[in-house]
Length: 115
Length: 114
Image (cartoon, rainbow over all chains, first blue to last red; front, side):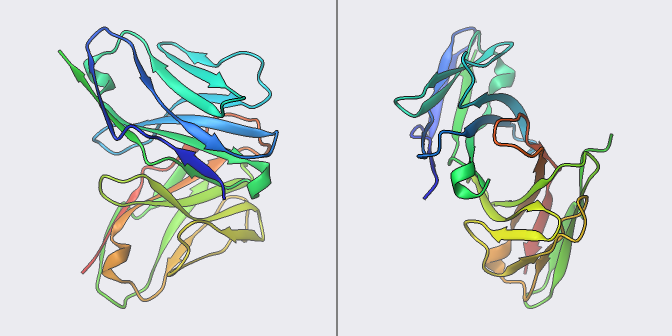
């Protein structure tokens, strides 16, 4: 079955430091997409970054970058220079043609930024 | 553009009642998804659709039904509501093709079954 795993239920990081949120996935399809979303306490889903399996370079969006290691099937999110406003739940998700374009989410990681 | 619009935003149901959560997108996206999110948990896929007239089950389809008669609309029907269906429901859509970007979400519908 299509699987997305986030092994860190919760993380703490000091303000202005970098933090890595882990995500591993399982698919045998060479064509797939990986997403990261942020969900603050207000509940909306905020798109952060996308990585396609054929993309040659790791995706970056401002302070967010995706450490894509295809052979290891990992797609970790790196947040640089953490800010208090980064405190939220973070979800990794995958869509794969192998699974009929289902788009499934990991269990999430709660990030708390300390001042 | 309005993006993905969900209605209602809040609803309280009694056990055994039925209702439909509406979802409309104006981006001409082929793929649409319904998720539920229980408190403190991740998003679970209920049903999804890859185009008008085509729907398929996700991870937790029991107790729900969907239809997709147009590209724009993807309503989720709850029959015989149960307390276990108390959750926040999100509708989302994305352009066709595996290697395309953002999944657009609605604001969510908070459903309570008493």
